[in-house]
Length: 202
Figure 1: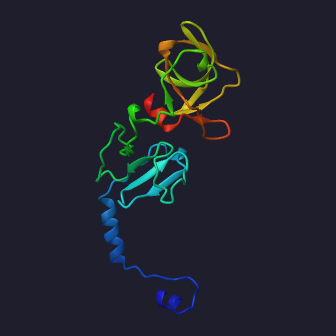
Figure 2: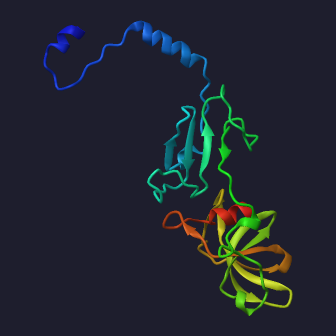
Figure 3: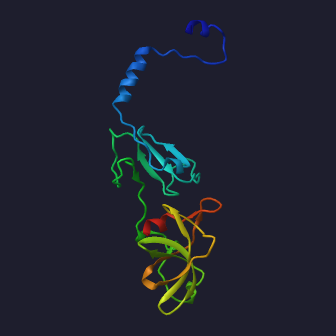
C-alpha cells in the first residue's frame, strides 16, 4: 500500500516507519512516568526548553523578549517526567517544577515597594493588608492615629483579585498593613493580580 501511495504523485509527503521502531519507542515511553502540570486550565503559555523533560509555563502570555524566556507573570519551570526530577521547592507530588528565582525583598527595585509612612500622603495609595493570615490588596481611604481605612479587593484564587459589587472598606491597625506598592496588574477585564515582586513578598 505504501508503495502504491508513494507512486500516486500525491501532494502529501509520506514516511514509512518500521514496526520495530514503534515497538522500541513504546518501550522507552513505558519507562517514563509523565506527570500532570498543576493548574493546566489557567495556563496561557507553555514553552519547550532544550531539556526535553522541562517546560516553562505562565498564567499570562508574554512576548517582551524574542526568545519568550522572561520571568514575567510568575513564570516557572516544570519537569514533566518523574524519572528525571529537577530540584523542587514544593511538596506537591504533581508539581515537580522549580520556580525561576525571584529577587528577595531587599533586592526588589525601590520603585515597586515602599516603606510605609502613615501620613496623609498615604491616602489613595495601594497597600496590602493582612486579614485572617491572607494578603489583600486595596486602596487607602482614610488614616487615623492608630488605623488605616482601606477599600480592599476580594480574592478568587492564587494572586487573583476583583472589586466586589459592594465596596469592602474596613479599618486596619498599622501592624496589619504589610506593605505599600505601585498598583495592581490587569489579568482580565475584571480580575487583577499583584505584580510578581509584590506577590513574592507577601
